[in-house]
Image (cartoon, rainbow, N blue to C red; front, top):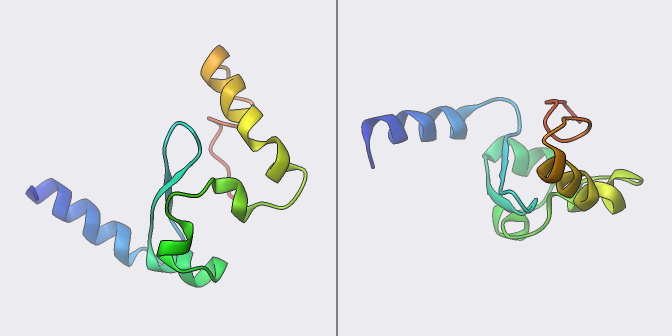
Length: 85
C-alpha cells in the first residue's frame, strides 16, 4: 500500500458516517464500520450485492435504471447529484 492509500483507508475506516463504495453497476465494493453498524449487515453480507439492498421502494426497484440512465446520458438526476439517504 502506498502512503496515500494508507491515509485514505484510515479516513475511510474511522469516519463517523457510514461510507459505502459501489462500482458502475451498483454493486457494493467496500463499506466502513459505521455503515455496518448503521444498516445491521456484516461487511461480508453487503460486499458484492447491489446497493439497492439497502433502499426502500420505490428506489429499490428503480435503482438499476437510475444507473443506466446516468451512464447513457451523463445527466445527473438521481445518480450523480450526491445525496444522503
